[in-house]
Image (cartoon, rainbow, N blue to C red; front, side, top):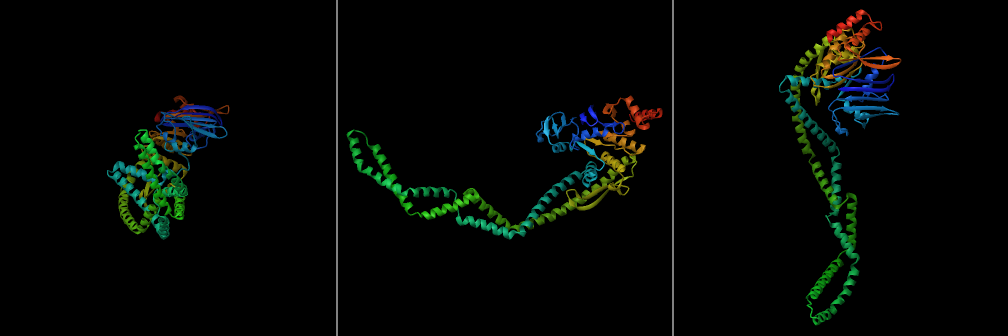
Length: 508
């Protein structure tokens, strides 16, 4: 709920602050006093309308999931709008774009504008019927859950099958491309670590002659080997360490001869050509390992393309069985909805009667299979669709629908002159329905009639003093005078005062 509103420098409002309670909050006052400005200021801070006030703020007491927007959670949510060259919004002192503001409050605040027909969309009516069925018919919830899960699988398989159909149209090209890519890599037949080995061979080849020359010169050391042994013997030093070293040196030189002999048999051009081919693969794929992974991926794709017909048949068989199952469940759901419609009609018509409306009926027709089953739902007033009724009837029907809904909703409901151009009886009906709705919602409403403020939990007067708009919460005595003013005009009569006392007493 909204606990507090503060506005500074907003057209005719210089500064205003108000504390709100739960339930039905009604604003009354002379035309042009600024009632709509107050409503608009609340709407602007919840993302529904542009912000025009230099400074505006609401305090929202609700458990909101703000962490996903990077905003720390708190017991209260403070929303602030500051307008300079442009308007900036803040939630708990953290800057947020208007888009995020609207997203946060979309499920918390409802604004019933004159042209908003979204409430009567088929999916909303079906949702109400399904909730009614869940509360009245054991077994419906599990049936609906099974249908929802099966339909999700059905759509996933359908999408997969459609991709296969698309692939089939170009499958020959895809097969040829996969074969071409595989053959290109197979022509080279790379091996992991091969390129590094070839670079090492290339390096050895580049210094082959130097190695031969150096080893040849170093061989002279063996001609003086006996001299070292004689010297060690005269010095009474064990010569085994020297013998071991010389033997190890002989082994090294012998191995170098074998290595040089192997290099002699290597075709340098072949090595360079192989390095170039492997380097091309590395440049294209990132590494030899990635080239081999790509080859394996293309082999798997080729196998899949070649097995498309088998996969397609399997999916088509599944879809056929799934559709039969969905059709059967959808038919059962429809039967439940028809029964629910009767229950819902009885409830909504208890409100339409109060609102001086013709009887409402729920029309259910079949349509293509969808996530909602095979049903399409609409609301009519004595056979007339909601799109063809008057705006006054539309607004009252909307209230009747909200009041009848089994949804366990909470939040804020904002209305603007919901009882405009209605008779006294119709206005009283609207007042009583809103009073009922205020058990679920905190409701903000503007009224120019006596009935709605007479049932309000809070009654505010919007008036002008020396050209400046002011806001005041009325006491019981002040409410009598304001309702009397609404009835008789600026010149309040005794009869109007008595009428005001009477309606307040009746609805208190």
